[in-house]
Image 1 (tube, each protein chain N blue to C red):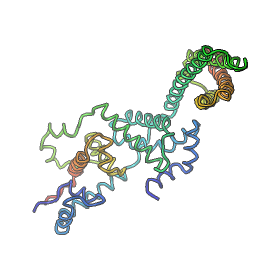
Image 2 (cartoon, rainbow over the protein chains, first blue to last red):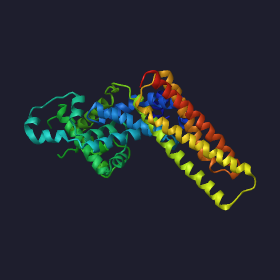
Image 3 (cartoon, rainbow over the protein chains, first blue to last red):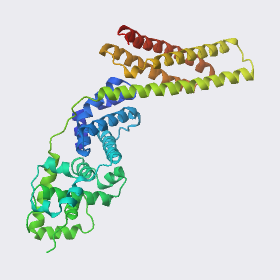
Image 4 (spheres, each protein chain N blue to C red):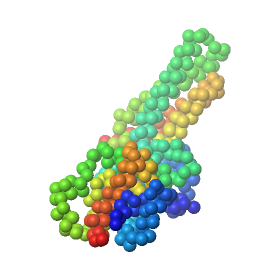
Length: 184
Length: 200
């Protein structure tokens, strides 16, 4: 059983019957789907979006879409995988809509090398928060959710090379901000 | 010595080989610094994966389900409108082509037409109460939800009934439209009674 299937059976043990009832329009079943996947969807959204409000909106948008299109879900794939892809797309759509600034790049431009000389050690959460929206989304989707660069590129409307370079750049920054640089 | 770039280190973590991976692995075998970097990269990713799960501060299901209900209602109205147009068109054709055998069929069509008109009037009455903007107590909301679910099921059956042959279709349509009117009547009662009780 794959990791994603294990997670799904942990989140929603009786997925097949819940999906069947949800397809028939049973609101109780739709709510069961929501309750089962609410936390991981929110976590994914919050890790990608800048604010809790945006993440909550993504949560709502995701389940609105899930409930509306549950009839189109093909059971050969994992239910959580399907829900997660909808959530990732909605979160990325939110990023595009908000056109967040790439804050880490701005900080680098303003303070230049002074920041690097400070050998700043940051908490991992704070360092992730400081990454640009796009870089953080790529880190999360690739390193945590396990999407390939091709899949991320497809969701972002970019090339796999773009996803790879965003990931490399993000790790270089995290390494520096976390004080992991070692003199060679 | 030129050390491995972050992009190359990351590619070494990927399943499958990329061009240049063999020479990168060769370099890694002889370079302590790059092995250290790769270890730190593995550890960093492990730490990111181990971050605590963030949970929403408030429940968004009520808004989500309210939006779904509003969407279903709009869909229902569209379906009812389309079915109404289709049925009206078939009646018009029947009138133009001339009398069909048996007056029973025409009477049936009239009854369908009457049920459809009643259904539309009830939809219109319901929409004037803006039910999606009103708060209902748990029990009333449950009843309203049950009625809306049943109306949605009737709508799906109406769509299917349109595909039947004429006589079974008319019988089925009449039955379903009557059922729809009954359910809508009950739904209007639920909303209107509750609204008058609290003086809305």
